[in-house]
Length: 344
Ligand SMILES: [Mg+2]
Image 1: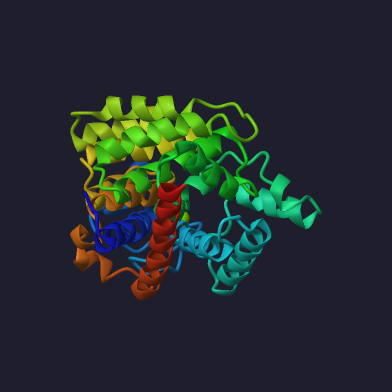
Image 2 (image 1 turned 90 degrees about the horizontal axis):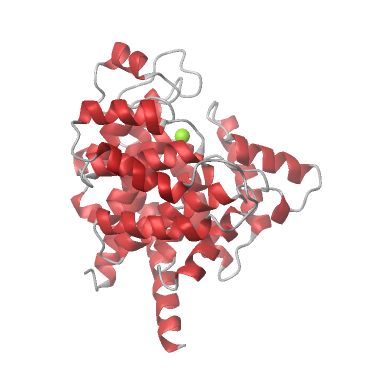
């Protein structure tokens, strides 16, 4: 068990930087079919550049992180600045500023469908607290890791309530909250010393709670699909597992596809963050988001010191010192909450 602040901080960094590895490795293959990935790259096992006409990644150099990592770091910062009550207006403004900034950079990888719809609604006068009532895609899950870093997993109701609070403006639906709760719980359990298997168990329990919150929308049950997806690929070769994930679990932007897919990747990778990134990058579909989620959860369970440093040094678009400062603030908030709960 990591009982020192340093060990917890190492795992917090593992979550954030692990996620960045999965994001950057999947950046050039996102939106492609597995056949097109094989045609362009064979099997992706290292950072590669996107092809010249890639719809959203064109122009980025190999190893560049995308919206998944940027929005996770942004959410982390807003969490720290918000204190106990999540500041919805600050969060929405931060997302708007972020999109303006990426447009100015010439990027084509902008806000996802649910976040975009919510921001449009807010611009039309809908209060931030109500704008996410139809957001059901994977944007909340892709950026939720900082909540798992900041919040101790117990009491679970308070944990899931904090996840739901951060989802409200953009992803206030049963399926998106369940998905985000699953990923955040895996991260939080990792910080508490859990391995990827116990982290997956916590994820399923949190997804069950999360599914009771927000506006109900139709879609397969996240907790059930996580268990099913992991069982589906257990003991399979990487090649067979990739086929099962793409053909049966699904790799689309829908929460009920990409989030269980990330947990299946964790299973095939046996909790190894870089393996998780490699498997995700070859899936096709929402490769960068699946990679960010899977490698982030894996990183939370092994820590930054066990991530492949030779790959981290080649990441583009991320300042590791800045990530460390954020991780320190989030871990300090976690410790403060834990001691407050112990005193209560
Ligand atoms: Mg992305």
